[in-house]
Image (cartoon, rainbow, N blue to C red; front, top):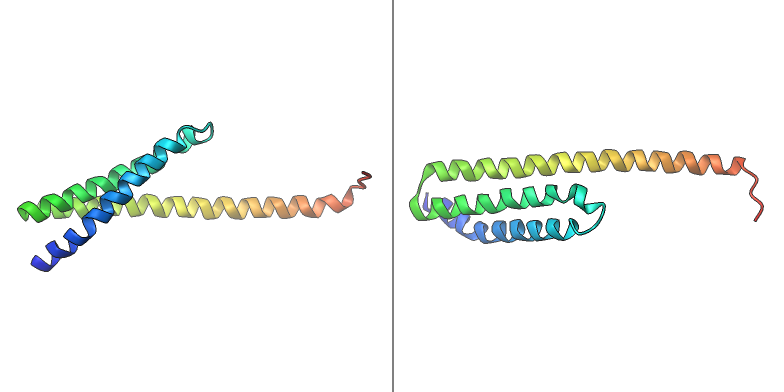
Length: 114
């Protein structure tokens, strides 16, 4: 278990850092009109990552196995959310490309005179 605690010790700083930057980025994103609708997502993901870092701290300090299970659960939640966001982004990109192709193919049928 010492090897596990060492690995967590080296990871927790980066996990917390990415969590905090995600929260700050989401807060800045909320300052825009469109961003206010979507800012909750990076904030939520940042909070989950920061909580994972806190659970890693607790495991390292107390060797509390419950903290280790919670750490893994938080990472699972984070990567599940990230996976869903990636899938939705891919789907929206494919839809946007198909719309752009359809619009592009329909333009030659119009006789534009500038």
